[in-house]
Amino acid sequence: MIKNEAAYQKAQEKLKQDKDFIAREKMRFKEMGLNDEQIDMAIEPLISFHEQLKEEVEYYERIKRGSFNPIYKFTDIGKSLIAFRIYINMSQSDLARKLGVSDAQVSRDERNEYYGATAEKIEAVMSAMGMKATINIEVVAG
Image (cartoon, rainbow, N blue to C red; front, side):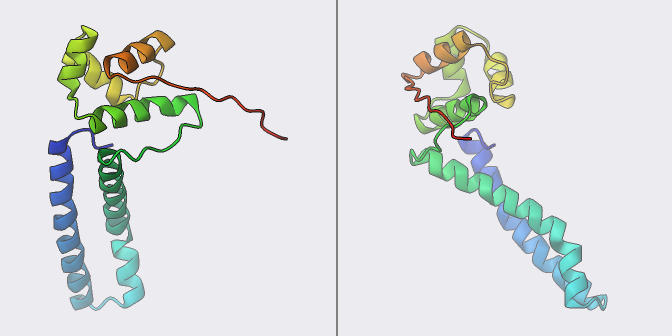
């Protein structure tokens, strides 16, 4: 997950480099005498990584615009906290200062997408970012 503007810029540049590299590899394989099917198989992993990075860039762009995915599982809360921090343009350092913890602690928490965080920690992070949650519990048929 892209968590800051610097990583976003690097990802944008990597996408451009990957696109050029894939095109060069296609040509190289063609010059080696591989047919289209063989070329497609050979570059499939490159395209897969490229598409994954492209999805991360698109997700970052969506959250910068304030377009968030709904949370359907409590385990998704961490990703949403990170997305909201990015949206409000708060750095990890700013969040750490507001929480009274080290930058490294916030970095670790975000790297793990707050997995295993207590409800109290989640509430403290939300409060530091000016967030509140509304939980809707529904019965699932079946």
